[in-house]
Structures are given as C-alpha cells and as structure tokens.
Length: 149
Image (cartoon, rainbow, N blue to C red; front, side, top):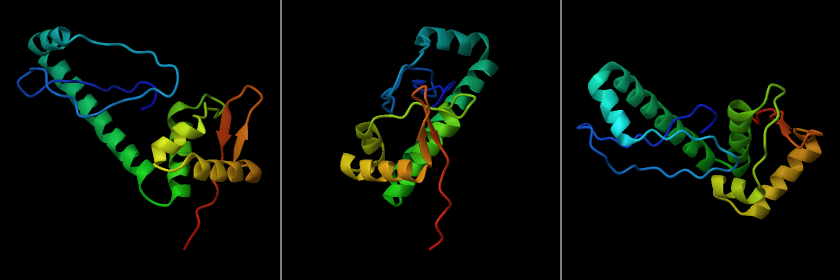
C-alpha cells in the first residue's frame, strides 16, 4: 500500500464486525487514521451513499494489494524484485523520484527469496546504474530494458 491507501474496513454486509483477511506490516514510518466501527455504522445509517463509496474504495484497495502481492510472488526473482522497486517508485517516490529502499531482509520477505539472492541482484542493479542512492539517502530506480526470450 502506498500513500493515501485505505485498508482494514472490517464490516460484513449486515454492518457487523467481521474477520479481516489481510495483514499489514509497515516497512517505514506511517501516518494512520483509525475510524471506530461505531462511526462507520453511524455513517452508514446517516449517509448511506457515502458509506457505499467508502466500502467500494476499501474493496478497490484490497484488490490492488492482492495484485501487488501476486506481482511480488510470481515469476523470475529478478522480475519480482523489479516489481517491488517499480512499486516503490510509483507509489512512494518524492517529486524527484526518490524513495526509501527497504532492507534486503524486507525485500527478501516480500519476494519470497533468500537475502543472499536479493543482495546479488540489488548489487548488480547498483553496478549497472539502474539503482542509485542519492546524497539524501533516498534511492532512484531506472528499470532495465525488458528482456525478450
């Protein structure tokens, strides 16, 4: 999830709390706004159209998260790592395309690989100049050309 994302809307169709089927772990600093269930229920009764929009937005964010999870967990390791870096560039970069690079352990956990394998690919990206650390500590990623098999 990136800035402005919404997750954790834990309502069933009858407006009662239900189990939430996802887990989120922050890889960095997060600003969080928690809306108590009773407020959502009041919103549903007083402004149902707004509540429907809220639920739709939540569902869309969950669908996007599921797509991202699939992109991080399927295909060649190099492509999975590129998907992570492209996600960071697209969703979290500043106005100069700089983003905080998660640790090798975090990237390895995201892509389901060993830290050593991730480290080798990340080192190669740095040698190729496609992953560059700026003076302020943020990273920039210029994806390598797509390989055609």
